[in-house]
Length: 144
Image 1 (cartoon, helix red, strand yellow):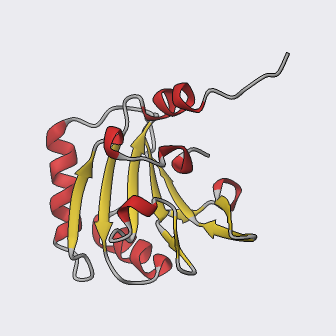
Image 2 (cartoon, rainbow, N blue to C red):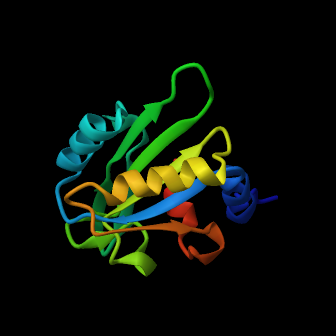
């Protein structure tokens, strides 16, 4: 008997109760997270243990993930870099530079809109959009 990983169920469980934003901000990831930490009161840190590695065209591509655990609750914010050396974590969204995932606890609409407004007011941010995981073809790429 061959065991198979059910990626669809895995993705459904991973994305249950999450919020996802797509962000266009053409600056380096470390600079972007620094601005977020300075201007919005977050404390994002790179988490190399959950970095996503994709293998394409006989090469490895590494997509960094920054993490911020909200003190006193189970909400965690993840900031994914969507690009690495000409490849994309989500190839169907090549125009996006970053993906912001909120997991652990569902964010209410007002909180999410407030987060979007704060991001939009940052000088390097050109675009912020809420994304539904149904529209993401390669959602398994976001699972760590």
